[in-house]
Length: 420
Image 1 (tube, rainbow, N blue to C red):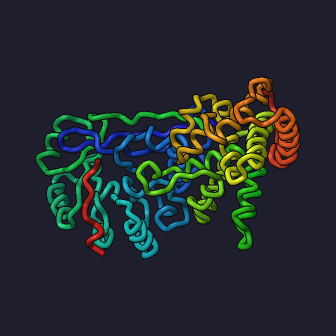
Image 2: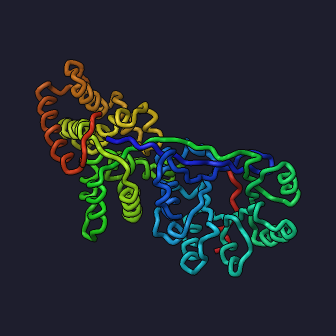
């Protein structure tokens, strides 16, 4: 299983007391990579969003507000929205043409709870319609006419907007901006952007294409999607990451199975996600690692069906996730941080003393060549051995269809809702 390095830039936004209230997330290409040369604005936006989820939103911004520059695709609904609305500001790029479709999309995002900011703001005909629903404007000090800056701020205040000074580079600029009444500040004087690295797993090209074909079919069922994702550990991991956005704040329930994660993410977002994966295919997949992971998941599921059949779906997910420390080269506890797992599933993944946790612990011991230690679940050696053979056979069958190659191994929120 190929491990992909991912990076996101971030730059803090400060209030008048110079306390960090949020971070703007920025596209940053990997060092030495040429992929960024192929990206337009929409795909850069999508790359930042999915990479942020992959790294972990809490790791990137903690409990602060997220600022993210977006292009037309996200605003009109053709690109996915994977960040939770309660602490996200979408910055409308100055390059976006403000037509009726964009206005309608912006209104929809605001109704969902997102905040809007107008980036590199300069007054233009018709912009009042967007100012009515925006929360902030960001004024680039390098582009603004200094003589008319006070008047521009006054015109924005008429719409009950907060004003952010961008590209604050000198102490005298900061002092003047405070005198003019700017609410927030961002720039090299206060902090330069910092790159935050992370790791994720690469899903196979065949799996992406098969899932894309299923998602294009109006007759595709959730069970068909689940079967594809069950056989592709990287997709399962990324699906759980998407389902986890917002879970820490109670906006989405925690999950026990992959089917629940599919329901939470939703059809439209799945389509956008798989389209992005196809466009950004970067890695190769090792059959050995896939087979090991799938065998563990399937064996846990089969054993659970013997002793606690109502938990077999949870057992598959627990077995799958229990191998992700090996796939990502990270502590298992760190892998689980950004995933929306309920307590029962998390305990099972970590092999704790629960029905499924004992099964997972025994499965791991069997895989590691320590069958004499596999006594937690109370299942006989014969049952464990038969399950391991059947699970390995299943894993080999499904992995052949997916593996292409093999290698050795807190911002002040404006009361915008009252304007509708």
